[in-house]
Image (cartoon, rainbow, N blue to C red; front, side):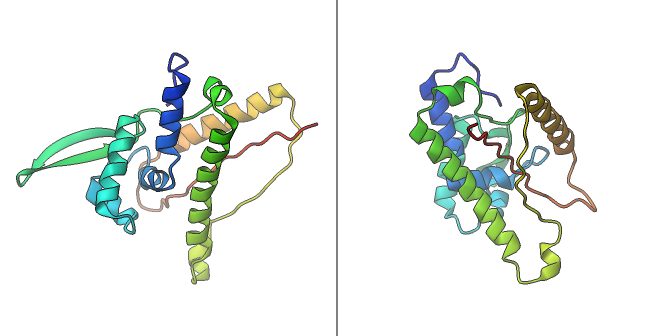
Length: 186
């Protein structure tokens, strides 16, 4: 979900704080665009997170519109909620990035890279070499004009949008795709 320009900088910062907390990033990453899970199912993916903390984080993510409750059902006197990602993903860009304080942006990026490191440790730290197949990381220096950069951004957005529509199924393995583009000074 691209944050609407009419939102205040304070609301954007609150949403960024909600999404870019390390435990909440793990909760968001437990879901995929085509997946709806109950709190119990999410807890299986983040089993080291205490259940009370999980429910608190879910509440914060729903309030920040980073998750939505897609269905509520009664279950033995209780209520089960199915959680899903919003129709559009939460992306901080443009005006939100410009309005954010530098220390907040550094904190958000630190949380983002912390989530990336956690996934990397879990994947590359597996003792079975066969389990580590299919992972990669790279850094490439690209010399791009502003227009070429816009084209690259558009291509990546179109490709990831297309691939995010894939449903889980036989032969498909979930793969986390992190993108970081940092222009260097001339």
